[in-house]
Image (cartoon, rainbow, N blue to C red; front, side, top):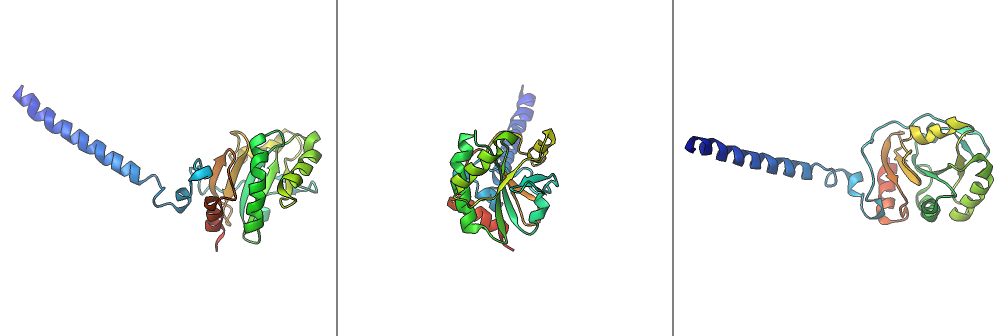
Length: 200
């Protein structure tokens, strides 16, 4: 029995020490203390997902208000906050005024909010009108291309989990973060996030 205890007790202490080291390492490497983007994941941005950070923006087309195809690459040099929304989505409508406020306060050569409606083709005129009402005319209207392939922009962007979903790309066209659900985009942390990714 003495021999068993001489082996078991040090092994137990070594296991405890390893578990403590693992806990300390994982707590300090979550990114919130060092990653400036993850540090801003507070308040309504607390569910900000940075797991796909650095993924290039897809070249999948969508349509502008005139019905012409555009891609994320058409906004090269600007950080873009892409918001997938619909008129039948209450949280989408609830957050739209704050997206408009963000566009008003930070929009320009370095940053743009892109609101892409996923409404059905028959509802696009209403969606365009509703976006104008909700945003005070500040946000430009974008929508899916015709046919089932129109949804490719949603899936290729990584936004297939529900609406609203918002994805932030930096000025080089690389994904910074994704947020599923509505948020207050006029909040301090949201404005600070945009300032961080849109600076030269």
